[in-house]
Amino acid sequence: MTPSHFAFSAAFTLGLSGLALHRHHLLSALLCLEGMMLSLFVALSLWTLQLDSTNFSTAPLILLAFSACEASAGLGLLVATARTHGTDHLQSLNLLQC
Image (cartoon, rainbow, N blue to C red):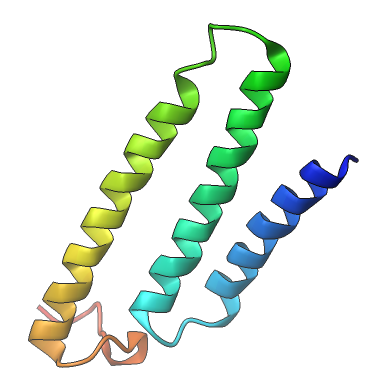
């Protein structure tokens, strides 16, 4: 495993472990998701550069566009949650309430 592959695997694993273990605030969960998407974007970009193929050259841009849409939807949910519940603690959210 090359050092760049190890770095991207470690960054993705750290984001995943942060998402799984530190779920106190909604903002921290969104930041962990963004870190995971950023590591996937960089890994996919380097993979397309190593292949020297134009067939996969749009894949990193599509992933980046989906990541931006995910970030905007997450921030919208964060603002809506903060307005309705007064906090972004995930423990205060009850999915069974209407």
